[in-house]
Image (cartoon, rainbow, N blue to C red; front, side):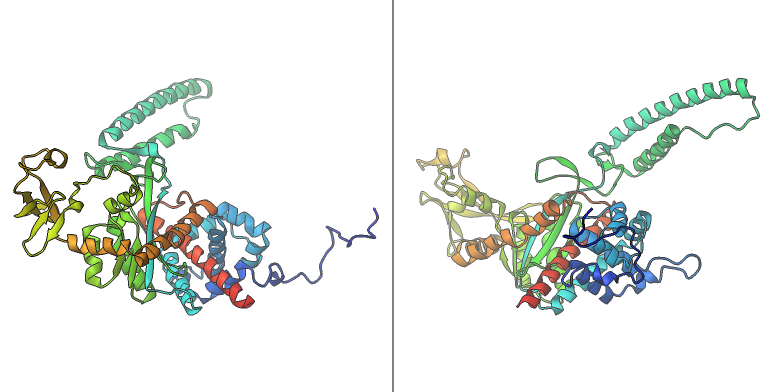
Length: 477
């Protein structure tokens, strides 16, 4: 074969001086940024877990580098990362040509997830030192992500009792088959010969029976629990399906850095707003001045809390958001209570027909306190049939309505609309990147604490991407 036009190659050629791992990747490669970041992180807490006795272990920084890079590019499986350390030059560079097996990688992640979660703040501060993490405005959102658990294994107490009965019937059937087999083998080989261990099917059934019994000892009568991940809750996802999910929440700055990340087992978003803000302030050591979030976070409690903290809110209520979508439709109720005008001097409301509703007192409903107003001349109103089915129109106004209305009025301004609309390309792309670009549709770990750590790892990877991009832009400037 003629080699005149090509560079010579020989797959069996021996290199007396092998190339350095530094030559494996370009100067501006993501793996180099990850290596720099991990070298700055204090891993002494993880290192202290290892003993000097026995076989030497892989250095925690080496495993961290491969994990960080894997999460950055959508490779989370311990098996895949282990394979990449043998076949992918970026992983080979980070692992310095060492080859940790998948069990080492998986066990490291599982056993050190709390420490790994804490490195989220370290990465954040590295970004901050580079001029990223511009605090003040914070964009907040949540998304549902599947737990590492099957929906079929979520049952109430009655469901588990029925399942346990079926398992015990299966075990009894298998035991009878084993006894028959033993009798036949005794006849063939004699009674003193060693028999085989219990069938694997029976071992699995007995292990499953013990797990079910354990759940039955803890479960409440109306509660539903998943056998695989007891802390995962049945939550409706974006596509409408109800299955074991975790509700993931994040706070993002104007420059796209994630400053807060945590998971919840509650379907509702509203209770996670203040936690996200407090976490953001603690992680960055700076104050939030403006909070932007969707209607899922729009509650009286949140409006009041933000008002007391001096934080400007751009958060619509559920009703406001619905009306904005229907603002061009003709089906808006002209006698909705929002169409009634308040007369502060007389503490009365005036209906669209000009009739007055007088103050009747306070009513309580759970944690809400309402002022009640009742119409005094509804009987003579020609539009009464369109306004109320009762003898007179009544409206209830939450005592914090004024605080909420201030937020809604702000959202109607040109500035308010502009600020709120930014959330669609500040926070939503973050979840889009994680779930669709990196294919993070389901957690690998189980239990709220470990899932929280894994979500922090996902968000940390997103921040590392931002740091890498920023460094490239600085070099090109």
